[in-house]
Image (cartoon, rainbow, N blue to C red):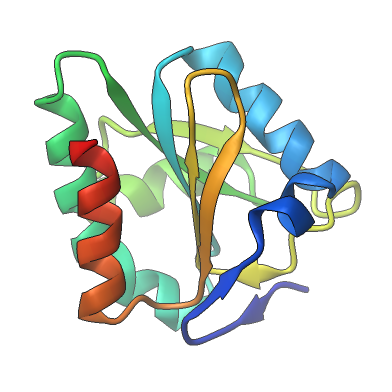
Length: 143
């Protein structure tokens, strides 16, 4: 089961060493070789639902980035379930990845990762983000 959490920032080195994150990034890179924001969510996570408005702003920003950024929504749930969640929150154009929780070491939702064009995880936040962390994510997109 995925744990719901308030905000904390993880060491990118620690996260990058986890097989589940490596597999998730590889799946995302199959979609795009641009920089990515990967949000790992669960339909049963209230923090995830609370974060959907922020994710919508990230999706909008990525769509206006001339292809430099892509927003990816990922969950350990069937793609149809993830698609319904995305549609219900104005994220129907987000790229979606369904992954197996059994083969993953991703245990916290929501989690947001910044992935560079080479597939390296630059920064990771776990839990619902306070305003200052949301601003940090937006700043990453402007770099």
